[in-house]
Image 1: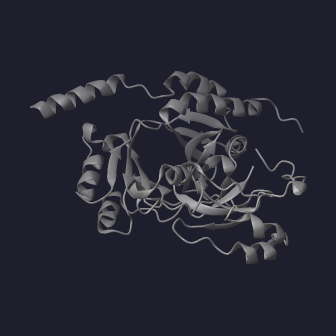
Image 2: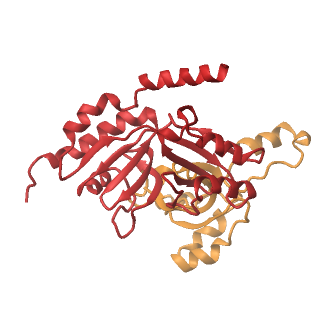
Image 3: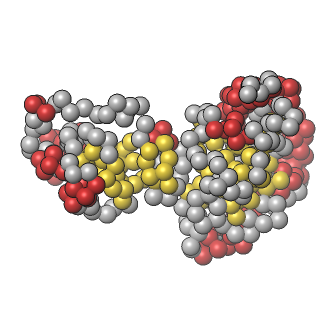
Length: 131
Length: 211
């Protein structure tokens, strides 16, 4: 169970929240000009990041407001909570300061060009980190 | 003429109106442990859902009707028997006695609608949306702690706060009305479940305490 800090309500259980998928996926400026391929990529293609991931959350049982969150998909560590519409905060400095495990973040943050290394799949979430 | 007919119709309906947990009334009484924890369903109340930007002009007009709007999570505003619960930065639940409803001679909904005017926002009559459970007694907090993850200790939760949260896995508005009394507002369709859940959680306090 994650303990998520809602910007309006403070720390609440994960069950009060609704996951909204990857953050910072802009709506195409001119959707009519997109090819089917590009439109499909906008609609359905999302990063599958191993490491720090920017995602949207909605406090559905509380204040019903959306917000963005930086979460490590491996350790489940929540690195930042920031309002919708603001740019993604620089996670590199934060992660180093907090845990010292930022070395995994360099390849795995946004672009999705670097495939996750299969050799490191032994890193799993800590016991009890998932519901 | 049509209006008075409608009023009589509504008042006629009032006599046969049943609250969502009325079928549990006997069970609630039997399950209450006097001196430890007491559960009862509260009377009907007039409730209005208000969505308005509290910092705008229409927000201050609404605040004038209700006697103030709460500013942050947990706050309860209002005056003269009307309480305004904070549900979100621009979303509030106005709770007033039943007589305040327009169909019973009051003017709460009408004056809220009038205060909002054509400005962006909404005022919705939610009087039948939620019911009220009154839970009180020295063990009330222990009962709630079985299904609520919030910090309910008196040092963290003061009387006069209301929080939108989960109790027994269902969404409720939890209001602390006194040192040992809580008010829970589940939606009507959850009333039966929450009533039975609370009764189950209260059951151990009927037996003598094992030291």
